[in-house]
Image (cartoon, rainbow, N blue to C red; front, side):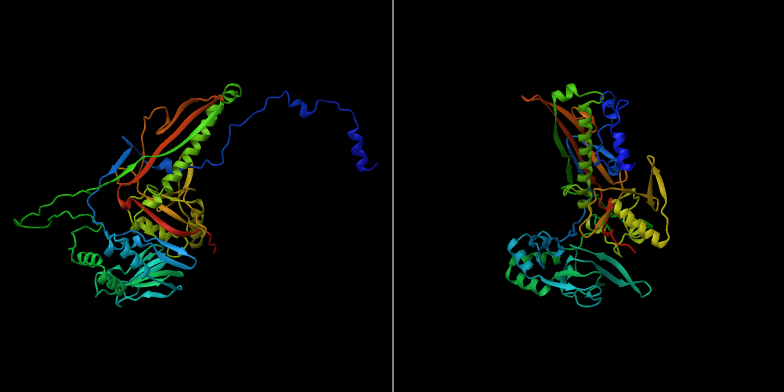
Length: 468
């Protein structure tokens, strides 16, 4: 008998016992609670110190700081042509607070687009500085002379940076460093002669530039804060200097942001399909998880209070070799005291790990809440999948000092709100409509504040896709 005939013979035999399909009709099914793939570790929410805010607003009072125009310049791109947004020219120290739109538009039209290949020199040390460079795309190294006569990298500039702005105020200015392209760069240049030509026709610009040249330098410390006059090491009876500590006249205020949704549950579901698991409870649980995920995303990416947008320009660094390396992480640490944590996308952490492997280094780990977290110089590196990864496969690494006592970064919330189920998160019953659907308003209030600029630093444009 063939195999096929044997199988057909077994199929024709009468059934001798109850089948599994029929038996399952009487069996009790063991079920899991509803699962959700969106839930992440949310280390930022867990590690950020939270401050209770009364009245929904948190004011950060700081010592008076002299603004020196340390923003970034924004560009618009049409095909292969790049243009600077006219109003963004006011980010240059020489044009700060100048607001004549027609004049700024004329200056923007006079900007000349230029391209440089890797290794090209944009400006050479000691030569005359007669134009401003606006870096639309690419990376540029500022190279100076080291203490032993060799070349030393003073800094790395990237998209949105500018340099050579002293040329607009000082006709005798010279380049104090060499600017060299690290990657292919697209640059807009604004010659001083064009600015002088526009100023000759626009009296407001001429007066503004003249006032900027004549304003005496204000005594300030290296952080730009108004100096506190002190005397030390003196003998005899000299006059002791008089001083006072001035505050910013318009301190920044952070208002609590909000994330809300209306959860709807039919009464029939809540009444009849409630065993062995409470439907309302699990619907609320999953909705709350989604709100917390959105909260962490906003704390990282929100344009007003998000960490990536609130980092000062002088606290933004560029990797020297593209990939995040130990040297870049050391530089990030050196910009602030008492760094408490790093935040990085998991793929950026993997890229940093590959660079450590290439150099034969093994990072230490620390146990936090039962999880082994990698560290660098003793500072834990927490994964955060809310940090974006660009189409060019680049990301950012955030370094923070946290807490009010350390003048760091703090999270903001308001506890004790009505119908609160978690700090600053409430669930309010909204009633039952004519279709017998119950509605609950689920609300979360939150924000974040950077108390002093050096509490937050970002290593930008780290490459996460390079393997070598």
